[in-house]
Image 1: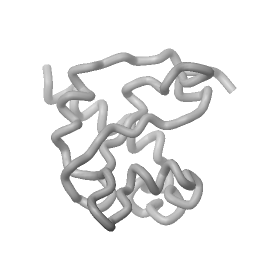
Image 2: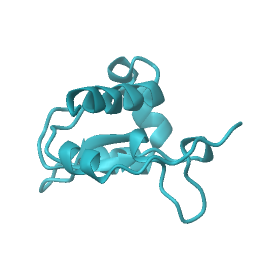
Image 3: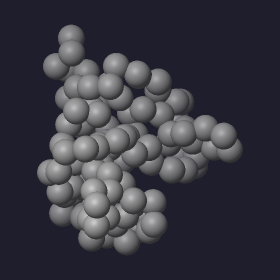
Image 4: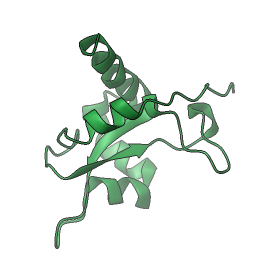
Length: 104
């Protein structure tokens, strides 16, 4: 498996912080970086910013999507595969690509 080069794009992260959660639509999001070497992540490194999703944080008694994906990535992706079209990596890339097209 080839390791992707890490993309760093602070403007994208700042922009996407103001998006609603891509899973449930709530506000109060933070960016989730996919985990794994194939996303440019490794020991001490997050995945590239092009492999990120805005996911909602915990609000009072409501566990946010960001916490859910950290608790069980596989279960979270399986439960939401209809949103990611069975391709969470492709979903991240499409979201980032759309941002790049709009910011030109």
